[in-house]
Image (tube, rainbow over all chains, first blue to last red; front, side, top):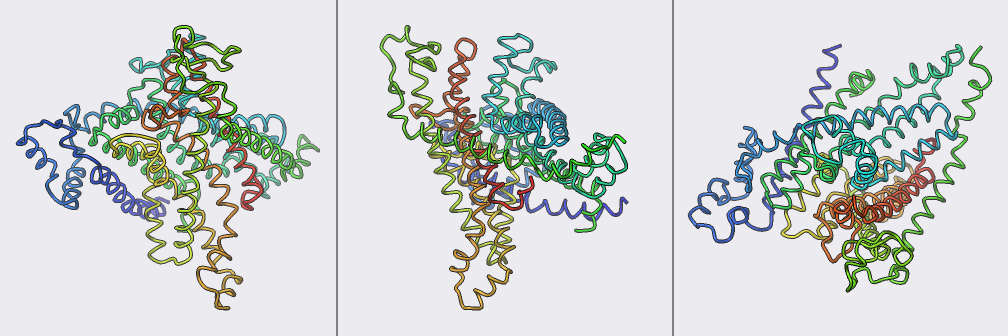
Length: 313
Length: 294
């Protein structure tokens, strides 16, 4: 079984290399085509010319673009993302400080959206076309269409300001209560997508013959759905959970801004405002790598869930 | 037997009995919402009771007024009429969402047709480039790209959304073309001496129109949400341009004392995007045979 998995898994990992190379080119391109001089942006217009020269050499800005890319890459593979213009600290250090908060938020939102989304999808699929199905699916479309930052404000208005049940915003030194509203907000879009995918995928599977025979055996309906159909309906759902990570990462800067959450999303927004390019590049790169890796995990999860995929490729 | 009549009878209902009515419902609700949104945006100069930018002289009496007869949606921190601002904000949202999507569709269709039809290195290049663009969560890359410009603004938002948005439609069109180009009717047209351009535009493109319309419809909503998000973060529309996103950012400041300032622009955005998504869903059922059963 393990040997079976190894080859296709290795293929998928190898297929990532060109993508990661492209990602690095694109992120590097952010600075290469960057309008304005980063050294000037860092030191101001009246900087000491000698210092400007020094920094240009340090950042290899006096060399042609391909050479700069190679220099940047060689530092990158050693885990050096450069130094923040504004904070004068290594970018990796700043990101390492901020990452845990974003991961906490994303994990919280994933758990909420998988539980609510799959639950709603299964319930809707039990009685397709009926009132509960229509209601749940309407809520799902509503969730998908809601701007996360507005939803965040409204939730905080309702649960924090008016009802006083939860903190309005902030990290609260990692208190659970502070996580609830941001995670719920971030989960909204994703929950709707998972609910819809679970439902339609279940309905697809339910038509298959083995489900008919499970019914004919006299199994209870929920047993048919949960034990027989849901397992096979999981593959598209796993995809959506993976793709949904994009929703979560995309929502992070907005949600973190609304709730003053100290993650890399809010840091990225601040860095853009301050034109702190090394920090912007570092954050964009980290987001992209997390996303690519998540997609790889989804691919690998398929290999485990569905033996057919192993044979096909 | 517990699996009695109701369970055994279900498979027939499951051919999606509800769908006919359900789909028509979504189409009607979606089209109505989109129609209302488009009409209010187009007619904003005639519908708006006040000049959306007018700051009244007696500011202390007029700022942050809750909804009342004179100002049905209340006023903002500068005493400006929110209804008028929401109406004008809709113009910006619609113009940007639709305008960007038209460019995206044209670009995506052209690239998708060429890559799918000619194959070879063009196709490999397209797939690699889309792989890379799709490797980024789009708003993150958009935020990063905005950093490249000296000053943020709606024009930069439009540019960035086009640069990142064409990949979806290009892939859809490429997929359609790949599956169609080996068909007999296409081969027959080629054998009859019909030129590549004609085959592409007359024989292949029309068959891909359904999925393109669906993707573009949903894309308009996506653009509107992205614009509002970027403007909310201060990276999009700058004053005096009125955008729902920047209105929301102002609204957050007064969330506790004057929640209506944030509520209405967001509710307008939600309603418009909801309408677009419902319409897109209904169109998908109508136009895209692959999704008929869902």
